[in-house]
Length: 455
Image (cartoon, rainbow, N blue to C red; front, side, top):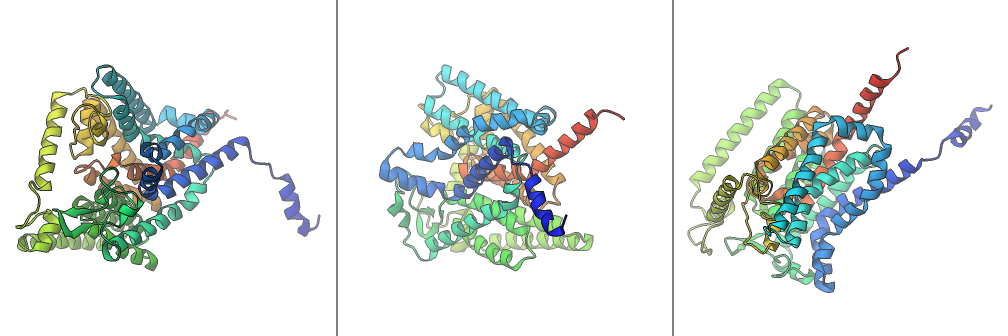
């Protein structure tokens, strides 16, 4: 046979894609579309809802998509030996499934006892479970195709560039209430936010649900860009991202982004000498920054940026006092109801309940209020196992960025309900599914070696 005919012969002998692979490919495109659209969904759903009504229906487009993925997902799970073996042997997977059962069970009990109404329960379950379900789906899809792994950077950074640029335009060029033209307002999402009711300190929110969600989202982007800190394009985009982060005036996100970027750079530097220098430099900068903030305590810019109040406060009560009260009330609820009151009885979803909303300003306290000590313990264990698995794969750029941003976002969640935000939760946990998917293949290989007949 002539060498020129070899490629044609290979093409003829190539096996067509199986049904499993085709289904997996379609689901990969769906998951990729969700990841790319998440940063813009608040903007578009608000515009659609304000023009056509049925705002809540538009807002749950992601959940509708995920529910539609259940039948083909179940089909793939039944066919994938690697995935089934992972579900059987992985404590991370088993705890997630147990957490699902506990949440649904507590929700049904709460509904029967009239502690929660139907809408609040549905939204509470969505907020608590959707990102974990998305993680399981992405892990499953990755067993059939590596398309998401090859395109994850584009799916994350291209939308992030649009978000950052639009946010800076909001602060520097566009009218402060520009978003009212796309339906933002008292009945949807505030068209603008300020620090201490001062228009001079407008907080940008870009296409996200608010300034704090934008700040939390930028923690992920900062950690991701830090993974390319040696690339010039990443440094330029990081500078623009940090500018947008500053104008969000989200103080928890400031610290979260610093933790994420610092961890990525520290772990990426292999030299022990440079690592020590980096630690010393970080400590010095932290001390200098803290000293500058304390020394300039009565400077108006410093007061409004870092304390969200000053001597000419326009608010009846400060946001700091409100947060302290919310944290205290949340901790008291967890102590008084160790079994929890069910999903939808606390956090943002509780605003739809017939009872007064319970906003603890802390995602972990929210889970304690809803799921009790048992649910909180399971969730913390899931988080620890997730961080451990990402740490083991820190040589991978995505896993490293996610590990570092997870540390930063854990801090953010101590002062907000960040994981309850659909953009943040689905984006980070979906990417985690991509990063950890190679572990499923390792489980399969170990299982095959164990069960293979001996010669």
